Length: 329
Ligand SMILES: [Zn+2]
Ligand SMILES: [Zn+2]
Image (cartoon, rainbow, N blue to C red; front, side, top):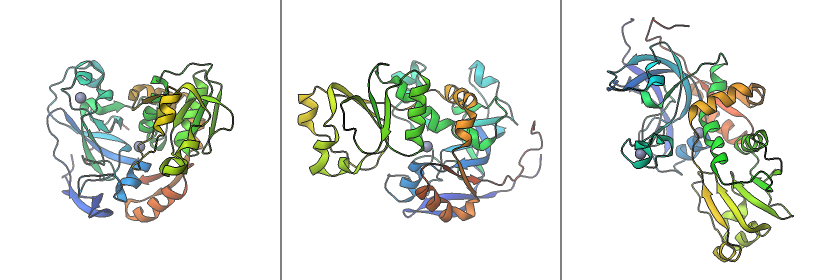
């Protein structure tokens, strides 16, 4: 093993804006692994965080969608067959939500549904850096031979696949509200799973529909006066599926909710292995989503491109320091 360099470049949130700073390589605690990041992708959440629209720990390293290699493992006191397969040198994707480990969901092996944990890039250091630590439980072996950038879609795919947890019937008319890549991904997932009555747009449908999947909020939703129009054509007993982490307030017309007996179902994540398997089945879909690559030093250009281009993903190609010489590549 080479002598470990102490400082690395990290894109942090400092005083409400993203700043490139030198940070120390994090110490690896028991049951954690150290990941050498190769490619990280910019998500809307990162843009909100970098603009101070989401409350984050000051000084936190941004980023939660990344792929890298395990270069170091802490003392592992953990018995999970799948996790015990992970070794130094393995290529992995990260589930960026770190569950609390003690709530009922966590204790019932439904840790991806935990609502009390930490999120990488928000309140725990994320992946816009060269080295990041994660609990082994949140690290997922990449078994395919697809490019790293394709596998960075694991987190948004896990988030999008959660739409299937909502109580939607195959025959129902679904409106996916949004025009960006997550909306496209949700429509694609719904079609792939046999929901064929799906329309996608930012403007509300002019004909009646049964389910609204809210990915991106239309202007009407943030303006109190026009909120009534927004769910005008949603049928009685209809369903609103919340699949957005918007930092804005939503104006939901309560009188329409009551009159039409509408239901709201929020969804969060599906398990990461399902997301990785989905990516492997649909490589061509993800190939079309690849946007521009930047270095961490070009973070300002990268963020403005990510904000402009909502159809494609913008990436940070992160230079490795080569902490390990035992890579299996
Ligand atoms: Zn994301
Ligand atoms: Zn929990």
